[in-house]
Image 1 (cartoon, rainbow, N blue to C red):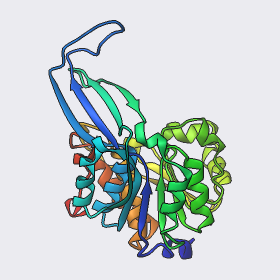
Image 2 (cartoon, one colour; image 1 turned 30 degrees about the vertical axis):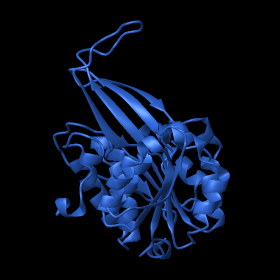
Image 3 (cartoon, rainbow, N blue to C red; image 1 turned 120 degrees about the vertical axis):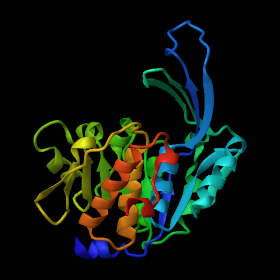
Image 4 (cartoon, one colour; image 1 turned 135 degrees about the vertical axis):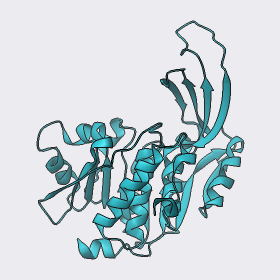
Length: 300
């Protein structure tokens, strides 16, 4: 395992994932079926799990590329990624509509979200092959489940010998059909862990059986999490520090981006996990999604 982690030092990171425009409406109460209500405000933010994770990895000090697909209505989001030194040359700009989310947030902080995949769901096999042909086995790939052709992305990267990091979110039927036996890192929350590993006491072992060569991380929010390494039967438990959480949006994305960047920077797994935890803790103390993802220097 040590050589596997050390192999990642100085690796460039490519995140192949979603880019969404988030339309956030502040309302007194969330609309009921058939009801028309007034919104107190509208704010528009860049989002998408893929873009969030790429941003976190870049702010953690990784050398990051982002690949995905947007419409012309989403081109403004690229400048934000570029400001954090993310290479966006592999983002395809199409004539379709950018993926977006319509979010209602009521006076108590509860929300409802309508997600439209848009261009994220129109990524083609040809685009994937063209993009991944630029990266070799010394590269790290991060993928989630908010784009089309995720099976082809994963299989193409594996065939190229890349170190693949999978965050199977959101869980869907396609995730259950993926062959994840050769991925290098699996990061799941409790819901995703149950979906992939069952709800028995052998859940972590079940996950290890599915991806025997991977670092397996199960995050548990304020309860910390557990980690399994491929060359050990030991389950490592890590603790989360007590913080006053005001918004948990993008906390999981922050954790994953920081963890991957730590490995690419040559950190040992324990150090990379500790820094990822501190970053996620910082994230939940700040309102917003991408605006809450900390830069590495903020954690010192």
